[in-house]
Length: 293
Image (cartoon, rainbow, N blue to C red; front, side, top):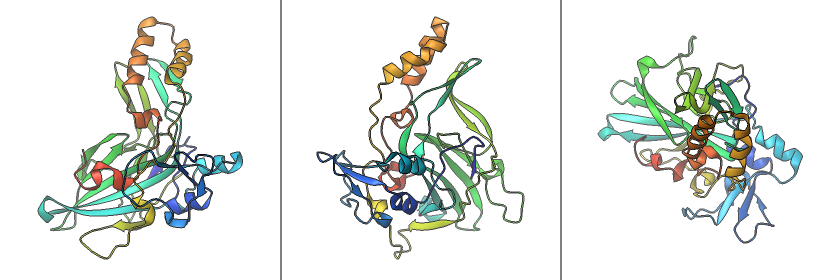
C-alpha cells in the first residue's frame, strides 16, 4: 500500500490506537469517557447499531495530535475470508484502519481549493478484496474501496511489485485514503469540478502482508477480536456547520456559476466523505456478508 508523498495521517494497528488513549463515549454520560482496553475487550458487544456509544481520540491535545497521525510501524491488515459463487472463488478482504481522515481538497476548473474541515473525521476503515480461484489459486480480480463505493479491477489491469514477491499494489488517496489500482488524480465530480483524490508512489509504504486473520467462518476456529463486534461508530458526529464552511470557501470563486456548481457538488457527497460522522467497523458494513457493490 503506497501512501501519498504529502500524507500526514497514516494507518495504525487497532491495538496501537487503543493503547494510546482512544476513548469510549456513552450517550448521556459524555463527561466520563472510559479508556478502551487492549483489543477492545470493554467495548459493547451487543451488535446494535445506534448512537448510544462511539469512539473518539484522546482528550489531551498533545496525545490527540499524535494519535491522529497514526503509526505506520504498527499498521497491519485485518483479513476476512469468505467463499463466493458456490465455493468456486474465495474473497480475501483486507481491512486497513486509519485513526483520522484528513481534510479534502477540491478542483474547480483551474483552481485548487482546500476544503477546511470538510472531509475530516475520526476513524477511517478502508479495504481491498482479492478474489481468488479455489481451483488454481490464481488472483482473478481485485476490489478497491473508494469512500462509500468502489470498483472491481481484473488482475491483468493491476500493478504488481517488480520484485520476487509480485504482490499487488494499492495506492491510498491523500487524506481520504480511498484505494486505487494506479497513481494519479481521480476527480469526484463532473465538468472539471469535484473533490480531488490524489495518489502517488510516496516513500511511506504499508506492508499489507503483515496481517491478522480476524474472521473465516468456514474454518470454524478463528477467534474474532472483541473490537470486530463493536457495531457503533468509530468516531463522533462532527458539529461543524457545512453551510458556514461553504460560505467561506465560495469567497475564492469569483464567477457565480462556478459557485453554484461547487456548492451542488459538495452537497451531493456522502456523509462519510463530508466527515459529518465517524464510520462503522468492518463487521457492521453491508459488504461483510455479501458481495462488494
